[in-house]
Image (tube, rainbow, N blue to C red; front, top):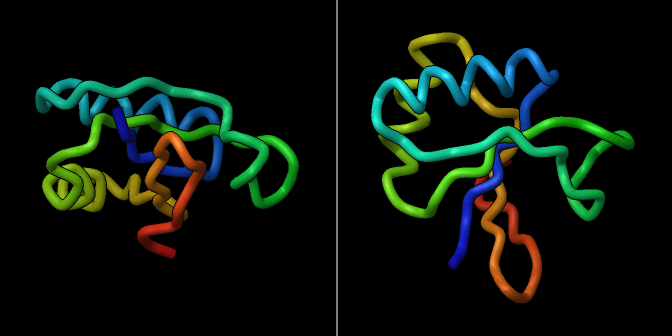
Length: 83
């Protein structure tokens, strides 16, 4: 099943983003950013089930927790869907 990977600027931002999304009914988890998409070594991201991406981004934007980049994770790798 494909997922969205929302890269965050720090572990704290990823944890806050997950909490905000979880409170609104989104299912997600904080993960280490996969090496294939990590910009500078390690980082943290929120992994979301594919679905209501626009709603999730609007919610995060209101809280000042917008992701750096957004990738779609699928069986064949990662594809950036938003810079």
